[in-house]
Image 1 (tube, rainbow over the protein chains, first blue to last red):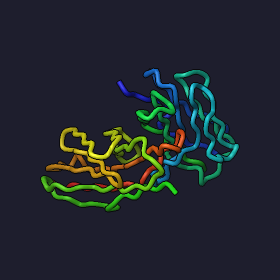
Image 2: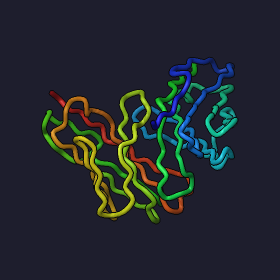
Image 3: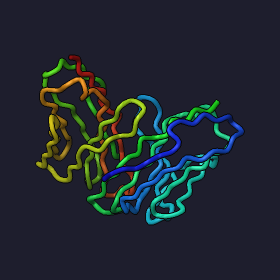
Length: 115
Length: 111
């Protein structure tokens, strides 16, 4: 079963709020990813964790803070966001980070609206 | 610079009218090319991974092919439920964990 779950499905927050997005997979995958996707645009990579270590941070503003507590869980902590941060946030995982046969599997996403 | 270009941007078909979507890529060595289907407001659903020129993969009405410069997603006798955005992505050999996505082709199939 190639399932990645994300909670919540929808989130509305003010610019002064602190909230967190959660992602979970139980496929034994060793890499997990956060993407941001605006309407009618492709996903943009934000962060990559490989074997629970942060491997890529694509110059994302510090108001986004990732956390990987264990190999199955990935969080994205949000603080002092701006309205332009409103987007679909996607989590993905892949089984064999760094290997040529690696494929990413995506979760359903969290629709974030910042007021 | 590594780049992925998909065409057309949008494609409108009648039910049963077969067609192809194109994904052309420029990368410094290809580790893998991926096709995903994405419905509005949902995460991309994995369809295929292709690794080398000449490779083909099929799933129901979909068939993906790969050459050294491009990939095609052939849709045979499409149905309205095939309507979605189809994303192509490549994993460059020197790209580490990065996957480069094309902008997608929005497919509309009318009954």
